[in-house]
Length: 299
Image (cartoon, rainbow, N blue to C red; front, side, top):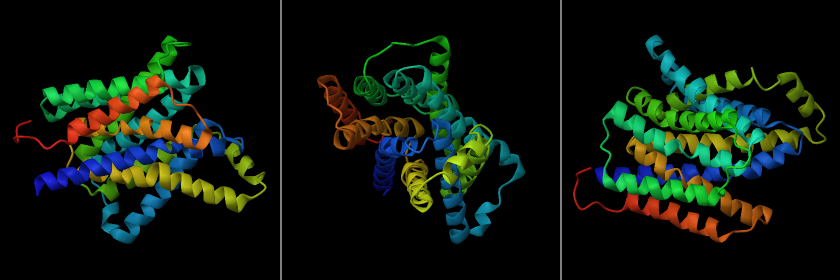
């Protein structure tokens, strides 16, 4: 029964990565309306916050009650993880090649594994280390090997995005010990969305909505963006964290750049290079390695 729950949890983590991998479709489409990357982040977070709040309202109103002493935990999830990592990542994209920013973002499994050993006393076994090496090498190959345009500021932003991304697994695991996944995701996104409005130039963003030829269509697409790139994957990931170790979850989520590469090929006629293909194989190998049935229960 325990093994079955862990398999379901792993499947949810992989599903989250697949949905995150489709983000390029929505980001590129919204950018045609003149929205900046930070404004797209704000749209995504705001829609997700409203949907999560509605889900919690319908499912369990008592889920809105949290202890005051846990407020720093949710602030950490909202500001320190989700908002921090997205702002760092989108800022990094503006000053360095996308491939380099992506590689730095996907240092996140390394930070998750180190923090899991420190905070949760997770065992750093040989299988996890091999899977981590395969996954990171795969991400490097899929994203492209490049150090071009890398500055100290860019390096710090890129590493910051990876740390912030990884922090969700750590803080989320702690929050799930006391609260439901719906409460965790709702408060995480409410705080992240509120913070995003401080940095997105709200007046400029609203003017772009006002200038849209088809406002109803744009609003519908914004809703889809929030649902597909935030609500579904973050809920799936948070549900998965109930039964999957944080370090294992971080590696499984590296399926995202693989899916992003396939999206680029299928939707934007991007080419698949030999190195990208090899990277996909390495990421899949890491996922398969982590999901193989263990011969014993030792970790």
